Image (cartoon, rainbow, N blue to C red; front, side, top):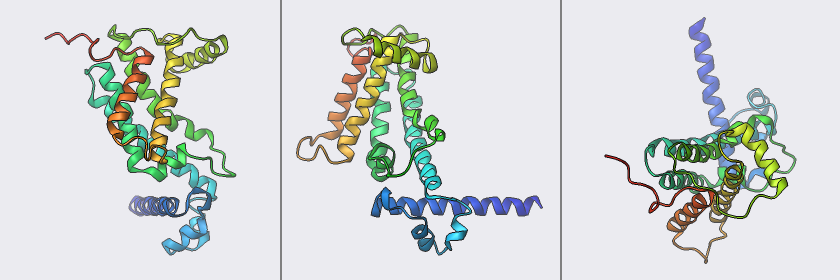
Length: 241
């Protein structure tokens, strides 16, 4: 019985993966608003009723694709974080940002699903929140490690307006109570700006404006890290030998 059940689970996993891949193909060809469960079933040679046993609605398929995309870009950021352990904070910050950018450039349609225009009629459920936070938490980890090592300075800019401080204090209590509230506010701003730059590139806003896009991104990401309070490479003490 366990052998039969294992075979069924493997078959279900394979069919689920095929459905999601065909849905990604449709995203690339038609856009998210035109994604159709019937069209996915037709391309896979399935009857619609069979596909509904895997994804009862288009929204459930959207949610699965969104979670996959957030997890993939989050995993790329986390791999960069782990690979740069022990390096200067500014280099780690830029590496995490670059990993997110590189994934977005390689998967523009999946990136567009999670960071592009909202899909009409779809509202993302709570299940997407944790996957969506993975890149941001990787950036938080860089800053926390810098603070632990005595390398984190105050963020640049004016003192926080009281409503901004209130929001940042709430986030700090949930995400990083050990970090100063102004640092949390600066992190949120930097996170938003990183993805704004990535979106400009993915969606073609840099065409005819920025040609050296990789170096430009690294420069901009480094500047955002400095705004958060990370030392520039010239300011970072050399490691003891």
